Length: 289
Image (cartoon, rainbow, N blue to C red; front, side):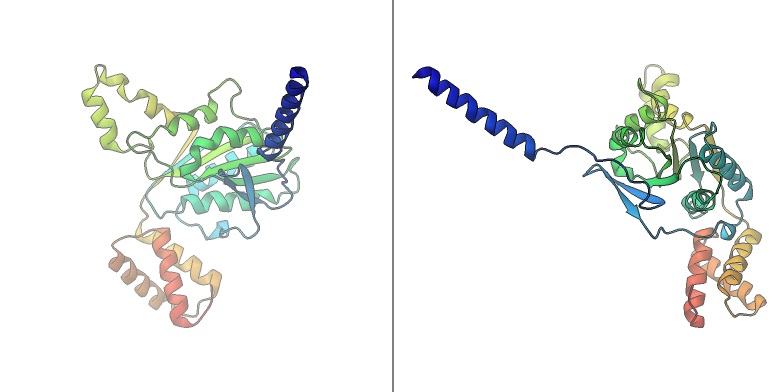
């Protein structure tokens, strides 16, 4: 009698175990790289969301950063063709086209006919950096090459997410997948606020080693590309390039005068300020961009 009850209990437990297993998540599914050229990493569900109409501009419209543009194109082109290349940190003045350049370079190179494998761009949000190792594991077996892009990357006090980034760049026993590079933009060259670094240095027993662990994060990017505030000539070149591209009907002298007045009221000159002026001008002219 007791043996029969025991068998019934075991059978019921087995049934419950199977039911629980059927309800548990099976983990990220395979990546379908044919869905789009660009994806966004959705860490909450562990999958890539295809972006069929990415927000990017023609690379010819990005002015005033010719030197860093050419370096980024060369590095990205080598990676897309299966050759060695570096992770890239694009840092410096805000509004100078750092994130726009990454997206535009990918757009310009992903359509090349001589690529041996698909070339894709995956954006990961700053708040999802802790899930970067999972994303790397998901992309590792895929027959494609990926730029994993994080815009406006920085770390604040008591933020430990940088450890996941360090491991993904070139740490850990597996290392970074050969088919993945990481590009990041930031206003800070070392990705950390200056006061945080100075505070740690002033209170440490060995000041020279106090911030070494955190500063070494930016050292793991093989390329540092600096973006600086643009000159008036560069700013006007951006304006004129946009106006010509969109066919805005305005006298060149009037265009320059209004553009300079706009930058004066904003107290800045940058690619973002130039784009905002063009949007305002096009609206006043009743034209579309």
